Length: 426
Image (cartoon, rainbow, N blue to C red; front, top):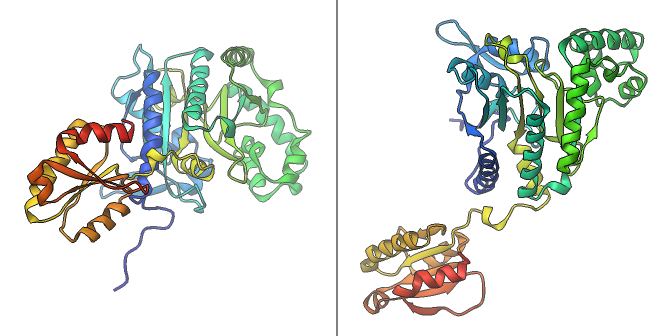
């Protein structure tokens, strides 16, 4: 009988890999907490119409990438391809937005049926941040200051750069879209296949084309900035002023648009060049009309999302994963002889009480001294605590360094926690 394997593009995250995930998640959680953001958790399955109405029916995500199915009641359901729409739905459904401001964040798996590649999979994980009810550019600036702080915490400040743009109101984009289509229609035969398709369905996405010939044609295309409304111009000017005051470096990219229909005014991307081809590690912007579009009262909003797979790949590529994220235990407690098992388990508990930040593993399963020391070494522990019958009788333990050539020493059990605290730097 053939073994059942994971679905292509949906990967297991193994015990050796989870520590770096936990490190990144914990770092993000700490930074968001510093800014007063609250976590929200949404289901991974939503009504299909939620994404059609928010993302846009003519986007690649809705047309080609969503995992959509009918349940037993005949309802069309979809595995969430992104988090913003579900967050808006949840916040509106539970009355979180009525006459109040909200700073929310979430994390979890998203699903898109596309060609799997390194750092980009069919089941991928995102951390998303959404802010509601704040009109001014100060909240846009806070999100960018917040992400800059996150890059510092992760050691990525020198490996990421910020690009920003304003795409104005829906009316400004409509006028610009007409001008862009009129211009590109004269060069239709020279456009790449994706751009020809988008010319009729989603022409602004052509600005994102990676095709060199298409980019050459765009050099003389109409400029979105010429079509911006005054409110969007003022908002963007004030945002830039706030970023300058905060010391956040950025580049204005007039070709930057987001692939989801709900964006307007501010859009931004944090980009790295350290993964070979240019890669976006965090992106977002304003979506002031989405809440109303999904049936709620008009509510301004702004947010971003970052992909954890790509962020972790970047940390690993740059060798920026700290030692504390290697998943290794600190202390391995070995029990030599049947009568020492219970005292060894009790000793492990006392060490966890005394050293709450330490990772203490107690040996289970019996075995010789040699086999237990092999398992202690494989655990990655820095020290082995050895408890035999003589040590139990004398109230001592053997303390054996596993990552240096220092000799084993015998110390009193009463002094063990203090000794380990000093050695581990706790």
